Length: 237
Ligand SMILES: OB(O)c1ccc2cc[nH]c2c1
Image (cartoon, rainbow, N blue to C red):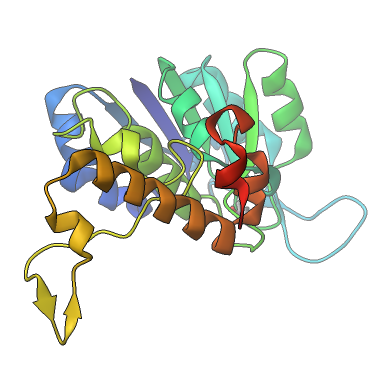
């Protein structure tokens, strides 16, 4: 997978050289390049922002540098983290993980001139995505989160691909509690079923725990959970 990130803060992406993402880059599973938006400015001050038409607080990112940057690195699927974007989900991560070329545009200030998004949408798929109902200083941290969600799904990145099937959100539920040694810790014992060796009973316990946890913490997920996967008994919450 090829990924281009365009930002005025390239140093924000140091973390993408660490751990499993760093290994994915080193092995060639992930070809990531971070670009400084100011590369595509032409004035002595390398200006990337200006005052908003219509007035209002703050500054808006100018269209010219962005247009030239996207011309240079595109086409691909353009992902723009934004407070006004569609909520980013595990399903989005899974869909994006199957693509060949992603481009991330990191906004700052009050955002990117809308014409940049509109112009890009005429030439490539554009997704404006939000991580949640809160606002960050800019898109960089969101890109790191999205890159981690996507990269861990790439074949060969996780040592044990089985981890992907049981984890939260992968099957539309929150995962069951996990335990490891010692069997007893501060007078708290591991549930006996997990030490029974009865894999069928363990699987049923884990599914029940997932359903209970999801119903208690995420009724929205439970409401969307495929009815084909639940019999009537399961729906009691
Ligand atoms: O909350 B966010 O994901 C986000 C994304 C981009 C910009 C640009 C200026 N503020 C931003 C916030």
